[in-house]
Length: 230
Image 1 (spheres, rainbow, N blue to C red):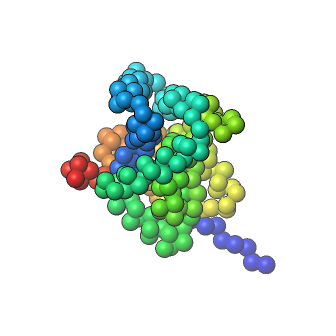
Image 2: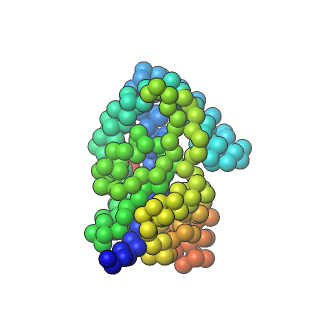
Image 3: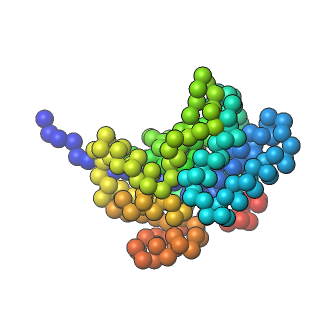
């Protein structure tokens, strides 16, 4: 029997790339409000995490710290809230980066495997993936015990973890990385972008723009702030 040719894939970071917002924080704000917390609770949590970033704490550790606020939360209830959150985001407009979604649709028409690779977690990513008909989601998976989050995550899907997950997927699915494309907006996406034969930088991060110029990668815009406000 003839061997099957390796399949090409398209790997998409999500926050700031496929969507114009950060799903983890937008969903956290929505969840806390839905659970009856005053806005100050979200502001305090957001400032705590921003302070870690400003102090130079690695992004993977900030990602771990994010999940502390989920300790004890019912995972099924979080998933239900995530569905409601996604519908609200869609209704508000300018949630998706249409440049990137257009590319995703083109990859689908060409038969590429479409993979979302995100430091976010499955609850808010699931409705996004379903809406886009993505084939696979590689993401941070916070720990659960007896259906409730513990507040811990063993391996955030950040930086080299993205590259390692894609390597493992490539071995399982016999993918051709040289014919594949990766899309990202942040320096933590560079290990992923460097793995594929083609890469696209989204947004205006100065380090990423310099990498794009050096590597000859295309530069694509985010949706404008004005469009998001509308």
